[in-house]
Amino acid sequence: MAQMYFYYSAMNAGKSTTLLQSAFNYQERGMTPVIFTAALDDRYGVGKVSSRIGLQAEAHLFTGESDLYHEIARLNQAEKRHCVLVDESQFLSKEQVYQLTEVVDKLGIPVLCYGLRTDFLGELFEGSKYLLSWADKLIELKTICHCGRKANMVIRTDEHGNAIAEGDQVAIGGNDRYVSVCRQHYKEALGK
Image 1 (cartoon, rainbow, N blue to C red):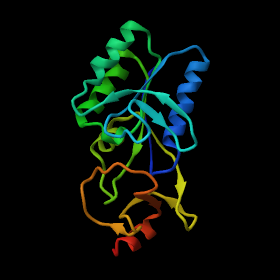
Image 2 (image 1 turned 90 degrees about the vertical axis):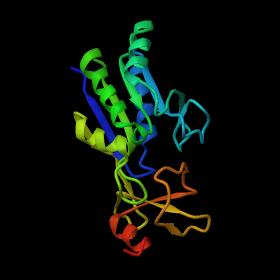
Image 3 (image 1 turned 120 degrees about the horizontal axis):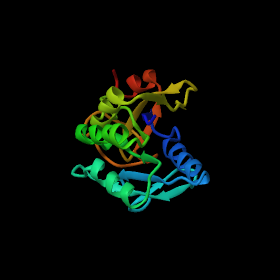
Image 4 (image 1 turned 180 degrees about the horizontal axis):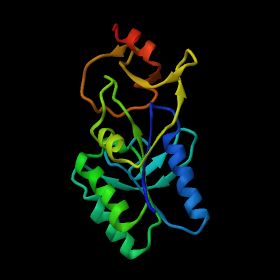
């Protein structure tokens, strides 16, 4: 029976690497996965999921207006899809998470979502909030803080490496803008 999975973590925990490994596993067994990623993150090229260790794959893009249920149903009619993999799933809307539950419940296709749990202010992203609420399985991928403890928070930094405590929820960046840290070092960096 198909289920929805949410793999979440702070940055640099290997979410995209894990997604690409899952896609490879399906392909190796003669099955056809379909990969989606957020259109607003084009750091590694448009329509690509890339990991920091150099793996990458082509992906369909989703925007805030995408109807994922209909897109996946259309793709599934053209060629049977055995799995849906969604990178940057924190950028999904509530409605899109619901649409993905429909992919699982009506089309019988497993959906594996990979994303950040919280933003740089420690607040849930909309997509993450509803994935945490509605997914069948929650899997935390772990990374570590510079002190060796589990990193579960993300700090946004300015061009000088100083922590920033305000700004838009979404600002695309990698190691140049974000640092994963434990809760203690998160609070210290933001003076809390």
